[in-house]
Amino acid sequence: MTAGSRGDVDPFVALARRAQSAGHEVRIAVTREFVGRAEAAGLDVTGLDGDYSALVAGQGVSAWAALRSFRTVVRPMMAAILHSAATAALDYRPDVLVHHPKVLSAPIAAARLGVPHALVEIVPTITPTREFPAAGVTAHDLGRLNPLTYRLAAGAAGMFAGVLREIRTGLGLPARGEVPGPVLSLVPVSPTLLARPADWPGSTHITGAWHEPPAGAGAVPDAELEAFLGSGDVVYAGFGSMALGDAAARGAAVTTAVRASGRRLLATTGWGGLQVPPDLMGADVLVREAVPHTEVLARCAAAVHHGGAGTAHAAVRAGVVSVCVPFLADQPFWGALLHRRGFGAVPVPARRLTAARLGAALGALPDPAAVRTAARAMAAEDGCGNALAILEQLPAAGSPRAVGPRAPDPDSSR
Image (cartoon, rainbow, N blue to C red; front, side, top):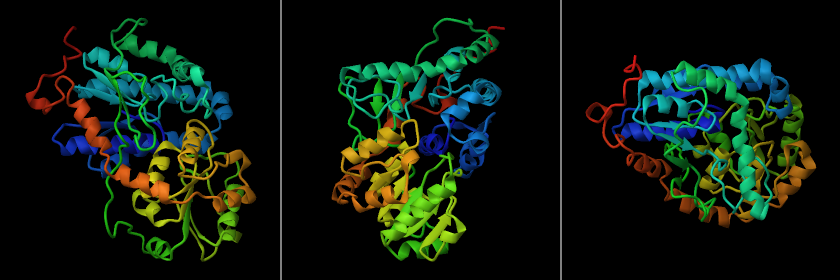
C-alpha cells in the first residue's frame, strides 16, 4: 500500500513485481492516478480513493497552500485514502501488509486482521539516529540533537487522529490505545549512497533501492528521443511532481544556463514544474512529459533535478553527476548528500534558481569518476531481493497463501 507521487509508487511496483515473480500472491494498492501504471506492470491492483496529481495540479506543492486548504481539500482526500486503504486490506486479507508511512490506517487494518505489517521508510524519517537528522526537517547535522528531529516527522500523524479513530471504531477496535507497531522497517535506500547508522535497531533494514532492472538495448521507443540522446552532450532537467511557482521562468533559467554551457537540453515537464517558453525552443532542446530514468540518464552528461529520493538514486545508479534544485521535504537532504559525496555540485534551491546560478553550478560539476565508482557498487545491489528475503521470514510469508496459514476472517467474531 502506497500513496504520493511517482517516487512513492515506483519502488512499491518494483517490489510487487519481484514478489510476484517469486511465486507470491501480491496485490498493490495505489491512488487512482497510478492504477493504470501498476496494471501495465502486470500487477493485481486496487485503487485508493485519492489523486495526488489532481491535488498538485489544483494547488501546487506549496506547504502554505496545503495548510490553507487542509480542512477543505487535504483532509478529505487523506480521509478517503485512509478509509479505502483499510477496506482494501480487509477485502484481500493478506498474510502481511507492506505500507508507506502515509498509509496511516495500515496498522489498524493489520490489527483487525491479526497479521504483521512492515513499514517502508522511502526516506529515513521514522527510525531515529544520531548520525543525521530526519530527512525533510533539516539538511544540517545537529549532532546530538538529531534524534529529536524524528519526533517532528512522526507528529504528522496527529493531524489525522480523528479520521483514524473513525476507522478504528468502524472496524470494531477501541477508538484509543495502542495497536501493534510494525514488525520491521524496510528502508529502500542504497548503502552506497547512505551508510546504515550504527545506532539503528536490528528491526530496521537498509535494503538497497527498489527499482526495475534496465530494459536493455533499444529500450527508448521514441525515435526522436533516441536521436537526440545519440547526439551527445545532453543535460537532463526535470523536477518530477514539483509544481510550484513560475514553471516558465524556471524553464527559461534552465534552458539559458544549459545553452550557455554549450550543451543540449532534455527537459521533462513532469506534473508541471518545468516549462520551456516557446521562444527559447530550438534544435538543441527536446521536451517530454517524462522519460525512463534507467535508460536515459546514463546517456546524459549531467542531470538537473529536484533531489527526490528516487531521482537521486537513479542519477547515481546511472553514473551521472547532478545539480540538485531542491524545493521542499527531503530534497535538501539528498542534494546535500550528493554534494558531500562528490556526486553533484552545490545545490541551487528552487527559490533561488536563476540562469546565472545554475550556469555556475554546471561549470563546477565534480569529476564523474566518484559517481561512476558508486554506480558500479550500486549495480551489485539487489534491493528488491533483499527486502523480499526479509519479508519471507515473517510468519506465513514464505509460501503461497493457498497452502499456508490464513489470516483470521475479520467477520469471524460476529
